[in-house]
Every structure is written in C-alpha cells, then in structure tokens.
Length: 342
Image 1 (cartoon, rainbow, N blue to C red):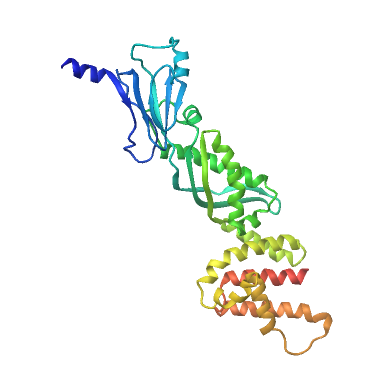
Image 2 (cartoon, rainbow, N blue to C red):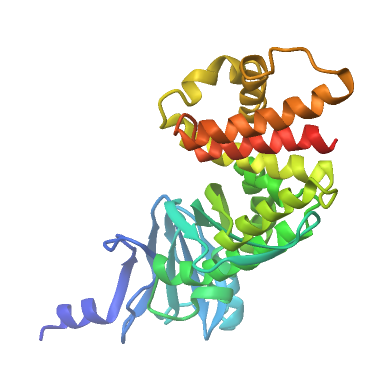
C-alpha cells in the first residue's frame, strides 16, 4: 500500500451524509481508525443537522452549510479537549447526522380500546385511527433522549416509542377535557385539536415537532353501543337527562351520515333540510310530522303524546320495510323520544 493510500485511509478531509437509505433519522459517520483533519470540511445538506459528540457528551451542533473545522468553529469540543487556540494534529470525535425532513403520512391507531373518563358516561372505551406527521427539530434532545450512540436510528424505531406516547397522551387529554366524549366523536376535528395540543408538548421533550395530527375515524365497542341504547330506553322513564340524550343523538347523527349517503333516498332526500343547518334526526322527524300525523282532530291534551307514539310506530314500519336505514331510524327515534320525555 502506497503512502498516499495510507493517508487517505487514515485522515478525513470531508464529512457528509448522502441519506442513501429511506426512513433513517440518525446516522453516525463511520470513523473506524480515521481522524479528522484540522481545517477539514463538514458538509451539512438542507434538512440535515450534524452533531459532534465527545465521549458521549454532545458538543457542537451544525446546521445546513459547508463548515471548516477549526478551534473557532468547534468551541465546545475545543473546551472539552482542552485545546489551545489552534490544534495542529488531526483529532477523533463521533459525528452524527440527523434528518430534519417532515415525515408525512404516518398512521396511528388504537390496537386495543383505550379507556377514558367522561362526565356523561363515567368511563368510555374508544378506538380511533388517523394520520400524523412530524420532524426532528432539536438534534441535541433527540440524541440524548432517544437515538443515543447507535450507528443508525430509523423512523420505524422512533415510531414504536411515539406510539406509546401518543396513546398515553390521548387518554390523558381526553380524560381531563371538560368536553363530553360524544361531542368530540360527532366532531373529529375537535377531538384532533384537543389531543394535538397535549401531544405537541409531549413530543417536544424528545426533540420532535408534531407537524400535523388528524382523527380519521372513531368508534365505540359494540357492548357500549348496546348499553347506550338501553339508557335511551330508560330515558323514557326518566333514567337519562335530556342533555345526555341530546349528546348521544349527536353521535348517532354523525355516525349515520356516511350510511345515509350510500342509500337511495338517504341524504339526497333530506339535503334541503341539512342545507338549512338541521340534523338528520330533525329533518326526518319533521318529515314524519308532516306526512304521518293523524288526519282526524284529537283532544288537545293527548294529541302531542299520541302523535309522537304514532310517529315512532310508523317510523319502525318504515325501517321494517327497508325504506330508511337503521342509522336514520336510530337518530330519528332519539329526537322523538327527547320530545316525549321533555
């Protein structure tokens, strides 16, 4: 081996990371037995950060650009190594590169239902799914708290940790919220906003910024849906307050919209009412009121109650004949029962 090859192998003139692999967030430059030349070049590309680490301790951090490595540009490392104003010999240091690109389209979901405390129903178990995006904004904190001295740290590895943080934060933020869960379920943007605020704070500890967070779907376990149906029945005897029944109706209406849209005569038949700002239940209730109300006059004291009971019976008949969807039936029934019990 010639002297030129020996020098090329032993000393580094340029340090850079080409990001050859997809999904790598942190990469340690392979130093082996090599040393960095005084006056060597550090190339940090856009959407990258480079960090010099001395014996496990973060020293100097460099943003995008080409940097000449001297005691002037490495003040912390110079202090840690007790260099004078100028060092003449090459030196060794661990150099880590971090990707600060936005990691988009990352999916999240509750593998198992999470339990949250709700002021209407005490304890609620909920499943939810959505998308989020994030990026590394504090390489020092990311190195210290998550990636450490590993040669490569990938997106999949960090998301294994983020998943646990996300689930714990969601349960905490929804449980501590004063907004009833059913109101959030009827407005998924509200739920996303509530969780995102707390999640941003949780991620920041690890040097990660939450870029976007949304809730694509939310659902309750079947047994809870059945229990809520029973509480609606109990409401006829005063077992559920009007406010709680109204909250559950909001959830039923929100759930029924995609189902009604797929049925002939569903949303298309009530589009005018929705355009006026009315709920599905209100529109169907008013439609039933105008088409199914008794034609013969009845005594005023019993007319209202008889009319609602008649609507309920005829509403059930429409469901049995397949003229309306189950979701439309449930939401309309809730509206009518609310009027019946006051």
